[in-house]
Length: 466
Image (cartoon, rainbow, N blue to C red; front, side, top):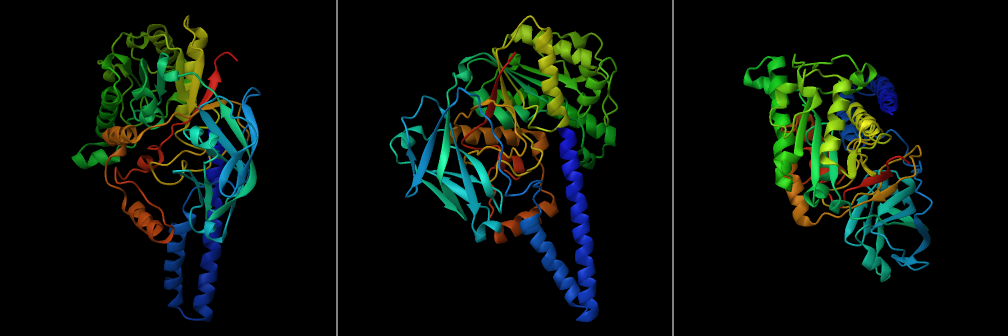
């Protein structure tokens, strides 16, 4: 799946280059036939238009239907949208996670302003130019829906008069022992801060130090390798300390100390040690001294796949989670995220302790870098799925305003999400604010403060062993 994203990105860049060449030819022609001074003016106008409306990485068409399948036992019913209200056709089945499949068609303004649907007091955004089947998240609106009072109103778009409502019932996973697998410091907070801060018993296992791309630390007068080592130490500390903000005790947090973007290589050659690409280190024990228990990889500190899987087996047998929370192996394309899920499932196959359920999350997507779309604090509609995913149940717990604020503060503590916004991004945001009506939260400048701090968190539920 990661290879698919690389193909999409390569095609996107190729098409962009071709468009730039074509635009340059047109501009030169205008300069020759009309007036030379038109060229810089048109170039400026073209650049502003690009930043306002064409800078998003969307590697699919707005007219593509999202492809979702759900298990056969998921209850569903047809609904009508009558006078802006959702009208049920049958008694609402039991279940806390509600998803409405409905066709959305953008209006003319919806090609220039982000189209969205007001779902009662919620708002869920879609890509500009939307014209296909989309999935609204109605979780948290059950009582209003049962009363026939739930309003649905399209802004810069219109909705079909009929849709299909899916109702999914889940146990209270926050009351079961759980283990969250985080490829990097901040992944647990991005995907599951609300979940883990409400959990009765949870452990958080971070696989990598997160040491790469440390250029900003070189301003301290450090050489590149020194900067990478400092960043790795800081993010390792983040992975152990920040969960305390969400109520997770230090003796339930583990940092394994493997190296960023090396997990796929480790999986391909399980017995070979893969040191850091940037820090010059190759001993995972450099950041393991605060772990609450000894692990098999402590014996030699070698960053090998065999050691990683053995570490995870030991942690499964120590914490005995009933639920694991790990990246979605088909939906989240980040190479370390894919390898993290590969490693935990390999460990489960070798472990004496067998969790029963996997909750899968996606912090990255193949084909849309803005999902969840729209402003912070709003709901999470289902992400683009242009190719059908496995038929998993969904679980979408709610985060109240206090938890959302705590989640935002947890993200602000993460060293990788700090620092000033690059000048180019700052200018782009100003243009999009003025011309496209986009807004960013006051809690922080990093894009994840907009994307991750929402009224929902979203997990795909997969029975282990099925």
